[in-house]
Image (cartoon, rainbow, N blue to C red; front, side, top):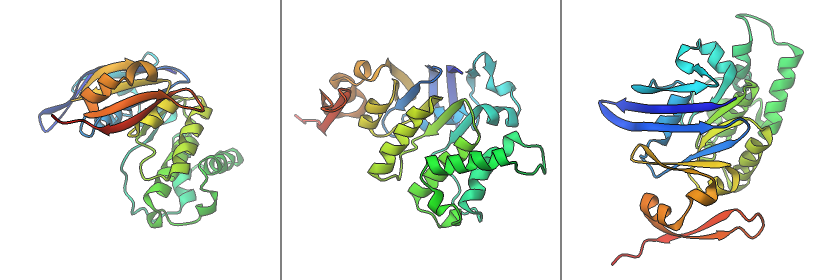
Length: 257
């Protein structure tokens, strides 16, 4: 299913945080949103799963404006992992992941064998089976991030929207998460902080700067020395990764006159 953001503007306290943003996350592709801090990445993604309402423009799932969908219907179509969430939930990891089945259940309906299998699969894919009975509030930031991804996987949606999902993760789990997202084959829109993770694991990149999308395309088309200098204010030597051949950035501070 295609996720399309069309001419979206978002204001907070009267100030435009995102302006005239348009992008398409194609079916089965991983689309990354990159940009410096404060560029509007989280705001744009929160609009994509209707946590924020745009002041102008719209977000489409296929041909349907998400503003017209009931919350449960949207939750059956889009799984979201926000960048920040409450950490004081007094429930277990398994109970948190089980919440992903809520959109598919009638009120007070009992869990089925299929539900338990889906939850077990989500726990396994995110490597959190061993902490399933721990209290969510006791987890580290990286563990909580994997739990939230497992909850989204338990929703069994066609679309994932992930806001910097590798935050707080160690290197192994960063790579595991990015590989898992690719293996799932879902339409995925994700904000990525690390440019090399974005280059190595995204099919298409959208660059936000000052709330506007200033470039879109394949990583090799977008991650040029000039763009990285202009948007991120660092120098970049772009080379081919020795194992995969994808663009790899060697970053250094700008040389000041």
